[in-house]
Image 1 (cartoon, rainbow, N blue to C red):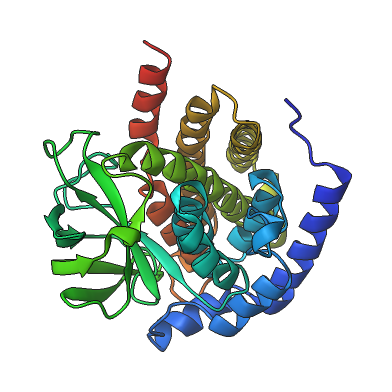
Image 2: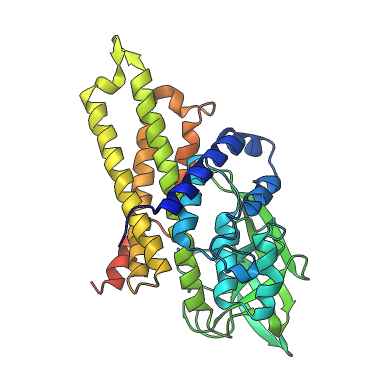
Length: 380
């Protein structure tokens, strides 16, 4: 498996890095947070990203996409992670978008994917519930037959950008127990549906999420995404793709935090010399570098395995997420500590990287959960 970028990917990465550095400095995170922006991101910048073709990278050309893979999307997500850009790639492109691409009907794909790719429609996937603890099969939201359609009742949490979405793809159970993989179905629910209530929230890293309440929400039979009762397998595929994409973003964040810290070690003087000359800090910086490079290798392996539909892809995704979660927390903690007292202040940007690392660690499963999943997939 090739763990270096191709020439085309290097060009894409350079273009993305330059554009994000100019258009999306980290100070945007503070500005969006301080004015309590209802979306938590810039719709104008999202539209620009769509016009650049980034939103359509993993979608077929027949819908206006680029017909590329997750490996190409990863080289976009890494610079976005470097600058903590909050635009909704995870919710739109990697969660709801992939659910529609892998399981949607022709009518659903034709109605939504072109609009998603051009940046004129926003979608989100509502699948997590209280106490589900990263288990996509832990679904208690009920789907009850109602003539030719269904009625949905339940609650979803941590719905990324759910408050901005024009439609939600909701996981609900038509049969089986609360953690039974059988009987889970996905439904496309448009904004404003009767009985649908969306409550905006802010995560630790200031990104937008929502709690979604469904009270006998009526949906038609045509709203099914995939077959009745077959949503668990589709959800697993979608969340794996999103997890790999998140790892690419985490890689960018930890790389930037590491590089900022190394520069600070060179600039900050004590006892008349740069503090980076102190052996103890050299050792800590070296450990950070090693962890970042290990995260890079595992992330590249995961996205390439998914693109190749490799039988080991799920294992490699869990390997990457476990490594990125551990490395992201280590690098962010060390970055704040080595910046000293100023690193603890809200005025300094390094603290935003720690908050992002904490939130990303618990998104789609933390390191312990993914190590356990890797062991189970390996038949340990």
